[in-house]
Image 1: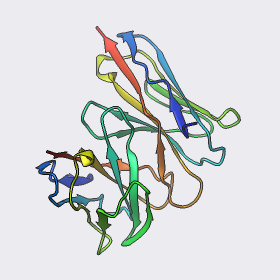
Image 2: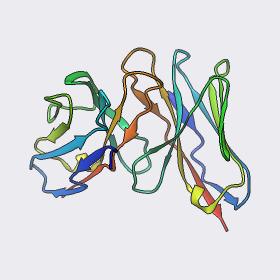
Image 3: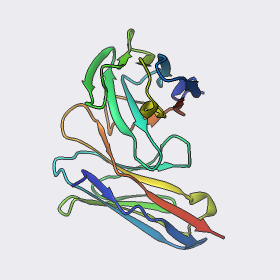
Length: 111
Length: 114
């Protein structure tokens, strides 16, 4: 079983739609959680850290469920510019803060 | 620009040649990471430094790969006797020690081994 699992998609949605991605992680001791966004042939860019209480940044909302070991990302009122791959990332336990990456979920927002 | 920088951005080399990449992290960040990414995959961890100390190396990092961060600032990643399977994007990231340890990535060096 992979340490971080995501539905690869692709998700094809029209502009203005709401779309949600889920991610599960296997290590219950994982400490920090993030969503990164990656455009084709570009580097990953940090989208949001995910806090235990959940957090929102504009049209983006992230939730963490430690009991079920999953993380979600909700995008409201999706824009064409949201088209990208969304990568779920967790850190392992310990001090090295190594990031464990999912394979990403591909999103295409269509006009 | 105060972000992570990497150079070169692109490198084409023939099999068997040695290549070296450089990464300059965000100046106040103590931690520096190297990753490798191929199409359709998430980044694979290679190694990381805290200041000048190399604290972990992945099993992916064969004997042909070596990384240094001699003064705790910039880092180099060298690949000796390159193979076609080394073709990938090599990403560098940095983070502060404290806090949520968000990692910020450079633009990557795309290596093509012919």
